Length: 381
Image (cartoon, rainbow, N blue to C red; front, top):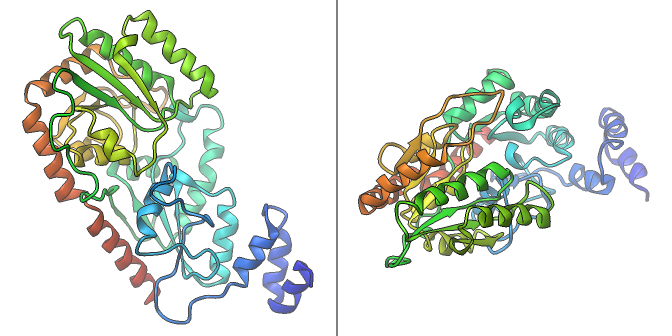
C-alpha cells in the first residue's frame, strides 16, 4: 500500500487534508507517516521525542541543544514515533520543526520549548527578522517554555514577543559527578588558559590569542589551549587564519589547537587548564561555562549576555562592556589580561568558589527532576 493510500484509509479527512499540504514541506514523507501513525502511549507515563530520530551517545560528537538531550535520554529515552511530549530547543532546531509541532498536535501530545538565544542584527546580520519567525511561532505555541537564562528571556521578549503562557528560567546543567576538578595541578610550570566550545566567530579566537600576547609581556609562563572546531570559515581556511595570527604575534609556541571534542572528552580537557577564557559577546547561556566551573575553572569573560548569571561574583571576573544589539563588541585583550592576572593571584579561592557554585546551582539531577515534574504536570491536565 502506498503512503497516501495508507493515510487515506487510516486517518480522518481533516488530518488527510492537512497532511497533503504538509508533505510538500516535509523532507521525508515516510517519516511523517510513521510518526503520525505511531500512536500515543495509553498509560500516563512520559514518552519524549526530542525532534531527532537519533540522539548521540555521550561519546559521540554533539553541539547546542543536542547536548541537553544526551543527558536527558538516560532517564527519558528518545521516542521518535510513540510520544506524548515533544521537546525541542532553539539552539538545535530540526529543519522540520513546524511539521513536527503539527504532528504532535494531531497526536494530542504536549509541546515543551527550550529557548536559548535569538537572531538580532549584530549576531545574525541581514535576514534576522526572517530567522526569528519560526522561533516566535514555536515559543508562543508551546505548552511550557524553559528559558535558559534571564538574558534569554529578555532577548526573547524583545525580538520574539512576550509570552502569555507558562514559563520558567532553568539554567543549563552539568553532571557534577563526571565534571570534577583535577586531582592535582595540571601544569606546575605554566598558567594554562582554555578557550573552549565550537569556535563559530573569528573574534573569539582572536581575542584569546591577543590576550595571551599581552600576558606574555608580564609573565613568561602562560599558555593557551584552543578547544573546539574552527567554524567561522572553511576548516582549512579558519586554521590558516588562526595560525597566521599566532605567528604574527610571536606566540605560536604557546598556543595548542585541540580540535573538536565530545562530551566524554570534555572533563579531561577542562582539567588541563587553570582558567577558562570566554570571549564571546552576549553569549546567551553557554553550557560550557557551567561545565568549566564544575571542573573548578574560574572564568574570565565578557560581562555580557547570560554568562554573568552563571559565573556570579566569586567564580571569575567579567570584563565590563556595553549592551548592543546592532554590533558585536569583542572584549578588550588588555582588560582580559588584567582579569586573568587577578584571578591567577587567588586561583585557589576562585576555583573553590567555582566548583561550589556548580554543585549548588547547576547540578544535573535537580535539572532532570524539574523536567520530569513539568512533563508529568502537563500530561495530568
